[in-house]
Amino acid sequence: NAGVTQTPKFRILKIGQSMTLQCTQDMNHNYMYWYRQDPGMGLKLIYYSVGAGITDKGEVPNGYNVSRSTTEDFPLRLELAAPSQTSVYFCASSSSGTVNSPLHFGNGTRLTVT
Amino acid sequence: AQSVTQLGSHVSVSEGALVLLRCNYSSSVPPYLFWYVQYPNQGLQLLLKYTSAATLVKGINGFEAEFKKSETSFHLTKPSAHMSDAAEYFCAVSNQAGTALIFGKGTTLSVSS
Image (cartoon, rainbow over all chains, first blue to last red; front, top):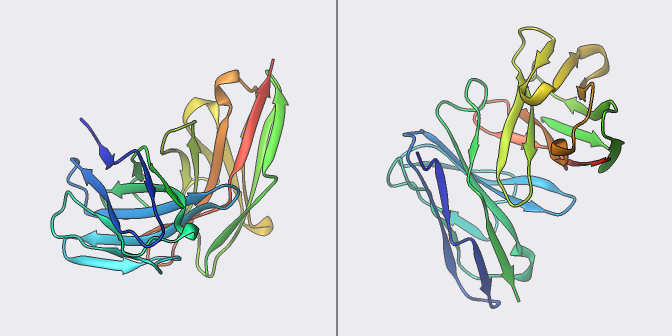
């Protein structure tokens, strides 16, 4: 059982480049999330989805886009990378929201923008 | 709006000593509260959660937390620290809709022998 898989593990981007962070889960979870983690700042919610075709903004959505065409996949798109987007990005999923089911996290993507 | 504040970004204890990690919350509705742990180079995993049943919640690896409404607190404790407890710990509160978690800034626990 793979759980939540994120690719790539590491990436270096130049300012202005674009990229997609991939996230897939094999647990048939409806809810999926993207968080970013910066040292001393904890995790900030970027976007989340409560099911295929439904997405919503979190605390820090600016500079990012998401889509949810299937239950399994929830890619995060950076269109014009900026140094402020240097961070560790975590994808997570849960079966039924946050109260009755835990979040299952991937191992993260470490992104550096220079 | 929901929020959590973790007091102390770093806590150091000796092996066998009491672990106390502090978390205070702010919520406009009865809160659902969580503690997650992150080991190096890994994602987070759930330690325990409070969902309005018992105020003393027991989690994995000997950790427990007590919900105190009068103090708006949800502190995490463990009677005797082990070297393997060294990690970063995050307190979190569910948003009003129950669709996402809002995390605190985290507390790094160091355990010395």
